[in-house]
Amino acid sequence: MPIIDVRNFRKEYGPTVAAADVTFSVERGEIFGILGPNGAGKSTTVEAIAGLRRADSGSIEVLGRDPADPELRRLVGVQLQESALPDRMTVREALELFSAFYPDPVDWPELVRELGLGDKLKTRYAKLSGGQKQRLSIALALIGRPEVAILDELTTGLDPQSRRDTWDLIAGIRDRGVTVLLVTHFMEEAERLCDRIAVIDHGAVIALDTPAGLVERVAVEQRIRFRPSAPLDEKLLTALPEVREVRRHGPAVEVVGTGALLQAVTSVLASHQIVAAGLRLEQATLDDAFVQLTGRPARTED
Ligand code: ADP
Image 1 (cartoon, rainbow, N blue to C red):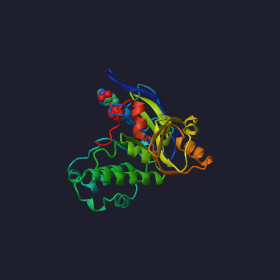
Image 2 (cartoon, helix red, strand yellow):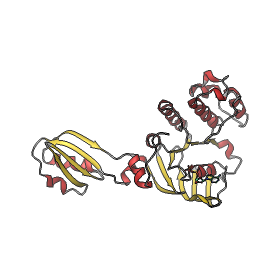
Image 3 (cartoon, protein in one colour):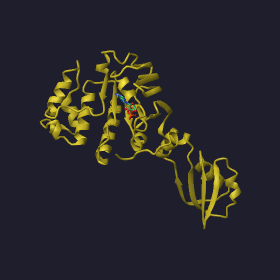
Image 4 (cartoon, protein in one colour):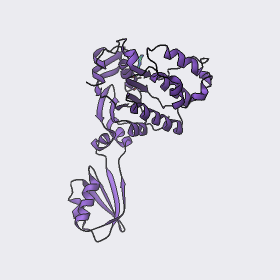
């Protein structure tokens, strides 16, 4: 049974179709990413999964239940965008308040130590840095021992170091056995953290795969450069289906192509006892895949 099962989810706000037709499912123990440009329908979809919005049509099940099932409040931890707490509330007060919502909350002093907030218990929310607020919101999402954590744009607005620290935390959440649904528009974040990614654009899933699979699927060009150790007949390379073009730059050879280009080229060279000195491969990234899939450049920083 999938942990989250979204089928043909549709949601309109007046004339705006926020989600046209979204279908995907998340398996136990995954970090599943939802990636897409602004306004693509990501938040609408996760808010429906979190039981905060009703679908106009289609179906959503979380742990086999309707997202509105009150039983899920205990099983699903939600950290949504801009889930700000009252400015004057201290970290301790927030943790105690949220603990009281759950029948079997975690030992929060240990959780906040792990999250590096152990010395901030008396600090008021307004006085926390962006990174500390994010870490507190993760703590609050995990306090009820959820089976599923929903994290929306968790690292937006963080500096690069805090962002990397947060990635370690998310990997740690998964290692505790929690299934993670992560909304992001950061390519690097999706590439590093996610087991699988659904790319959403214009309210629909336009691709669903592992990060490597997404990159491969768009078959963006790759380039290999090397210096052959012996004279090389270019026809050996141009005969390969993966190769589109071979160029010479003095003693160096540049091969442009797609798919398993590196394996194809290196095995032809090996079979002719040619060594490729100074071999370099320029590969497509998830950024390239995103641009090709959505027709829009990916934002790398806010
Ligand atoms: P994303 O999270 O991918 O940026 P959203 O799900 O927030 O996208 O928004 C999808 C579309 O729905 C956008 O055009 C947005 O302006 C619109 N939208 C989102 N929430 C509302 C709302 N409460 N009322 C009206 N329009 C909304």
